[in-house]
Image (cartoon, rainbow, N blue to C red; front, side, top):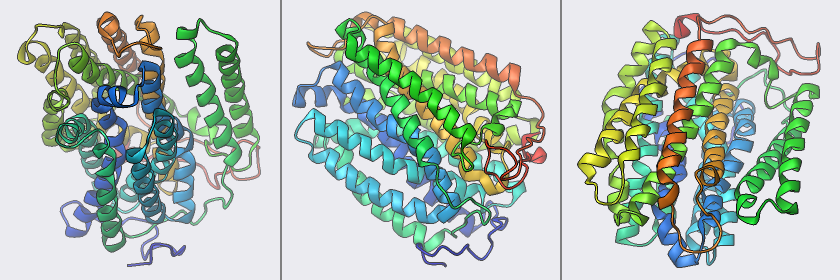
Length: 500
């Protein structure tokens, strides 16, 4: 097993060696899922802790939005750079480094004496997650043989989805047993165990043709764009859109334009824009944006509302989502295998509409309704929709990139997913008429409207998938130096036997 800091590739740099059902394959999947699960959990586990954080640190809803979106902001802005570093320096190496940084920043979150410190620590925690998340999927995509890759991706996405769904339940239990700070401290031993597993059981792979330069300018302009837009969306409504909020919003838009310009002119862009010439790649990522916006908004509002509006304990509120976990545990891998046979279009069209139906059913949650009558039907339908959607969506995106650039493809899709959740949490409170600044945490008045909007977002994702996802076609990316908007050394081509 190569040393984790060795820049030389593993014995099989083309990554076409592991099979499903073997001990080596199971170890790679288990390690990848455990690492990505830690990051996925931290994107959702905080939702169950928000009322407790509010009471302990005196935070209003705007502060809590920052606690959630701060993590998503840096994760979204830097995850593509994390994927590039994995391709260049080694996927396992970046995975291990990311886990170490995640453990340290989690400790800081747990020790935070005030809400500002917590927000800053969450920003740093998202940066660490940006290293380990793309590497976790790229380790699978670059080490499994092609005919087993769809099932392996299905297992990864399904188990990773379980981690995201189990986050509120785990958070609720830790809050009840210890305190909200425990939801961060638990990451430290989990990261340590995963680092050991990665060094012992995961072969390191990297792209031998990767450009040695990293697009820091692109990452910084994207981070500035997201920060400006999120600040304006969170702080603008409660302050009546004062000068600072307007300037931040305009600056965010300007930085986004600058990001596109930088990527077009850079000889080594972090987001190769020609990839988006693929109808499937663009459509799958657009579907991702809307579906994950719906999921992010739903988990944020539901878990908080169950505690503040219906009197649930953190543990009860978190446990309300367990049906989603159970459905994804038993059926996601099979969903990935089916999508590999029939193609991604049908499940990617049907799945988001089922998600939309599940979210719509959650509008029936109101004071006095029982869990069985109000929450369970929506959770079951939402879980079924995620089973249908997640694995085919991930496979469709990875089918649109060359094997050597699996890190970039997975990183872009991960970034889009986090941006969807980020924008939903930032926008929906104001869109639903919920006061975010000052006073006690109270979302009663706008909960139903927020769920209706989230349901509509998921349905839009299904429409996009129906209109854009087709049989794969090659994506022509010019070779390095021929034009100014790509650094990829060869034409990108899809994997028709995976995407068909």
